[in-house]
Image 1 (tube, rainbow, N blue to C red):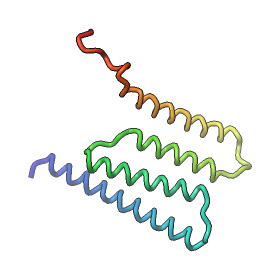
Image 2 (image 1 turned 180 degrees about the vertical axis):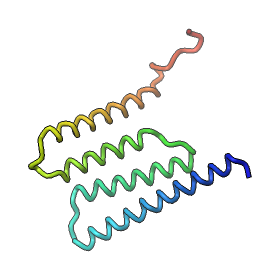
Image 3 (image 1 turned 90 degrees about the vertical axis):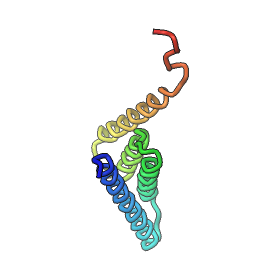
Image 4 (image 1 turned 60 degrees about the vertical axis):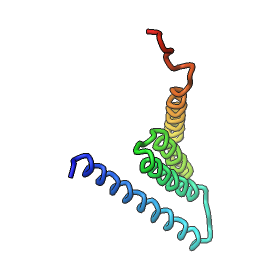
Length: 127
């Protein structure tokens, strides 16, 4: 068997393991919300993180690439969830740092999206 096929099979197996982990985590979280009969914003954000991970896996399996914007969006959601879950008696500077982290990640997504604009692409025939 060729080394590229072996590596690809290992990659697909690992990604499927991550997918099933996300699916199980999603199911457990929904089950917990049903049991306690309460849905909070932090719970919804966690479900969104699971859905984004599953979406990233879908894109990887179909296109054999990972778009960097998916992990950035997941990171923004995770930091937002952290802000919601943190206690109110913590140092306010922590909230500012977390907000700045979200801003930096959002700017990174914007910069990554700008690279597709035709205006920014080099013109053919020019050096």
